[in-house]
Structure formats: C-alpha cells, structure tokens
Length: 616
Image 1 (tube, rainbow, N blue to C red):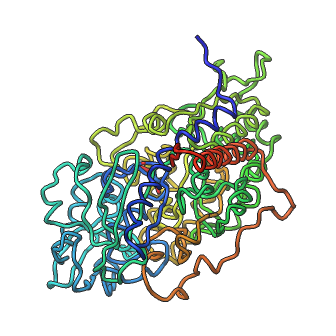
Image 2: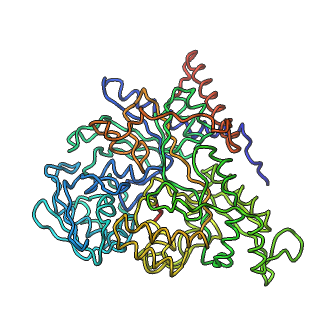
Image 3: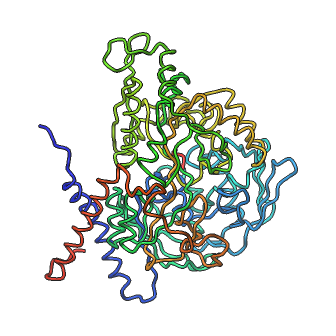
C-alpha cells in the first residue's frame, strides 16, 4: 500500500487539529481568571517539552530552554552574554591576582520556593554537585574548562572557588551560567537525569505549579522575589510543536507570544493581526555538521570542496531574505564579540570541482555522481528535523548545489528525537562528555545554535570543536580534530576576554581552510507579541524578549524596551515581499486562520462553540 504525501488542504486541517489543544487551553485560562479581576496572565507557546525543567532533565526542544530555567532558578551573576555580568544572587565578586580564585558575596534574605532560606551551603553544594555528576549541560563549566580544584565557605554569606589553572572569565562562565540548586532536595538525588517526577524548586521569579507532559506548563509569580514581585501573575505555556500551528495560534489570539522566531514570510499576516513585531540580533546560526570521522569527510580538503560548492548567499536570501546574514565557515556569528569579522564564506564552483578532481574523485561511469579512487560513489545523506520546514528546505537547496559538482545528497527528514539518536556518539553511554570520542551514525545533519550561549561563551569554540577525548563535547558535534586549532583555543581559555580574541581569530582561520561544517545562515531575532496582553517586554542580548528581566519591575531605560524598538519591515531592502519557502507556510497560516474564524462565526449561531548534551 502506498500513501500520498498530504497536500496543502490536508496540512491546513492538520495544523488546525494540532492547535485544538491550545484553543482549549486558552479557553480554560479565560474561565479560570474571569473571577479574578486585575490578574495578569500571559500565554506563551513553546515548541517542545522540557520534562520537569531541571538542569539535568531539559531536552532543548522548547526553543527557550535557558530562559525557562532562569524563570525557576537564579545564578550568582546574571547573563553570560555580556563581559561584565550583573550581580544577582551574589552582590559582588572578587578574584585573586593570578585569576585562579574567585570569591562571591551572597545576597541575604533570599528564599527557596518552598520557603527555606538560601545559604552558602546551597551554593557550594550546587557547584560540587555539578563537578561530581559528570553529566548534563552545566558540568563541563566546572570539571572541564575551567576545572574547579576546590570550593569553600568563607563565612555564612561568602563562597570561594579555586580553579586548577587561570580562569579569568570565571564570572561569565560559570558564574553567570550555573543555576543554584537547593541542597535539601538535591542531596538525595543520585540519578539526576532520571529526576523527572517532582516539580522544580528554585529561588527564581516564577514557580512551576503544573506540568502536563507534551501539553503544557503553568507558572505563578514568586511574590516574595528579591528583585520585586513579577509584573505577570501567571504564565501559561501550551506546547505547539509545528511552526505553522504555533503562528496560527498567535495570529488568532489563542496565545500572546511564542518561542519561535517569526518566519519572514509570516510578518505581514502577523502585523495585520495587530501584533507587535520586534527585530534584534539573535546570535544563533543554522549549519550542516559533517561527520569529520567518517571517510571522506575526515579529509579537510573534501569538506572544503563541499563548502565551496554551497552558495550561502543564495540560501540566506531565499530562506530569510533581509532578516539575517549568510553563513561563514568560521562558525561564529559575525556579531559575536569573539568573531573575526573579516572572514567571509567563499562560493566558487570551479574551485570546488578542482578540489574534488585533486582528490581523484571523478565521475568514472558518467552517471553525474563522482566516485572515489576505489569506486565508491559520493552519495550521502543529510538528517534534518521534520518539524523545521526552513531547515528542510535549506537541506534541499544544499543538496541541489552539491549536485552541480557531482556530489549526490539525500535529504532525510526525521522526528527530532530520531535525529538526536543518530547523531549521538557511539561510545556515549555512561561516559563523561570529554571522554566520549566517537561520532554517531550519520554523514551530515542540520542543527542550530540559538539563544546566544555558544556565540558569547568565551570557550564556545573550544567546547564544540576541540579534538574529542580531552575536553569539550566535540564528539557530540562533528568529531573535528586539528592539533593547531586545539593549541589556540587551549591558550585562549587561560586569557581574559579581550586578550583571547587574537588566538580565537587564528583558530577561525583554520576553520576557514578545513571547515568542519557548512554554515548556512544567521537569522535575526524577529519576535511577535500581542501588546494588549503584555507590552513591557525588554530586549536583551542573547535572550531576545522572553527572559526573566522582562517580567521584573524596574527602570526600562537600562535596556532597550521592546516597545521602543523599530518594527520589522515586511519587505527587504530590494523590495521583495516574500521568499521561496514562504508560499506554502503563508497558505497554511492564512488557511488555518480562516478555518478558525469560520468556526467562531458558526459558534455565534449555535451551541457548537469550542474554543514540549546539545549546545544552546
């Protein structure tokens, strides 16, 4: 039996079906809050479930993992996306002359969500716990680079940490990155990755009070928060996995804001729906990681030939128009403080073909696909999430471009979990991240680094591209290994933020010569929200508009208020109003909106009213 690919009409009804849960969620919210005048409720849609939202159980599927954790937990300093993070749980920090010992003075009067006081014991316990656990998103910041040699309680309000070697950016990472955990709960947790049953307890501005797996979250304000009572009383978060359905919910008013960046092709529709559009740097990137341990991808000359054949200008223009920048082989967003802004991607079909010829990879049988010297066809597979339409289309464009130089590529769209399984290192089971050395079962896969952490982490390049087996988590990314590159990023790790820029620039030039991945584009952060629901959003570098400081009282002039920014134009500077991938998406969005509107009209006439370890 064969099954036809669903056409646009079926997709519209599918999108509406996925949205049904969100509609019911919103209706229930209205009923629940109708008896409580003045209560401010925000409905914010997520793209995936994060389990019970602890540092060890998150899945990175929501689109806002770091900022969700920051709603519940606090860090000693706030935001690792700036060279001088601001005091938070710590009121001040000092370091020794050799940059090895860092001492934090803690804020007094802070309580956990269960009412118990935060103590220096909690802080020391947290950092020791991350050090010993050898797993999770945060551990490598205390047991890899930097390596925390010791921790101590100086007095009831002061904690000190000493690194094995100089750690001059300790205040950035881990100081402004590690969430502080309550010792009285976590000292009994022996398997943190399995600690999924209980709701999280933190000191943050919001308490999670309900979680329905793969359906929704609900948070309520921590009224005794040390930075002041949050401006929002409750945040309800339905999980809407499909992009079109998420923006349909936003357009029709079922949610007030969403985790995803606005697709350029949806801007006009969203603006017509009365939504506010804000554009700002997002410091993320989309790229195709190549398996640097699998022949012929283990040869940097082959990877360079593929990169030369990829027209990232065309891909960027086609998929995001003026809402971003084309990719560059040095991996970092040109706006990152550690990027060498002089480096540009080179598209050159002639050089790509010449590079393949030099490797004795020619089309020996005349079928249009080159073969290696031993007769193996240059035929490969790109894995991509089936939920990311733009990334699927990007993969198709790359496949078309590589075909021009005689390389055949099949695009395989899979469930995100399946992609993650295929790319997981073969020797990952039970091993600490730095000890994992073997890449997974793939030729290439599409991934993205969003939210700014990688771009602003002074050791970002070290963590993802250092030779697997000594430090970082290179085996989880692409298995890249270059001794000279390692020497440069290792040296940079011992320097302050300003001084490390020179060795990092040299490291990026190595990546240009033998790219471990094909960098496709760096999308801008274009965000949409319903101003009637909440208009005090704040733009913050690396976070977008959804972050804890958006919900806290205080002077908005310290940061750019989102309401004061320029709205994103619906046309690019060349006057183009659409991009190739937008045709179908606009059809789904508009068609779905019409379907929901039709149901609402019928409802007025009768009783049928019906109104979820990756680098981040």
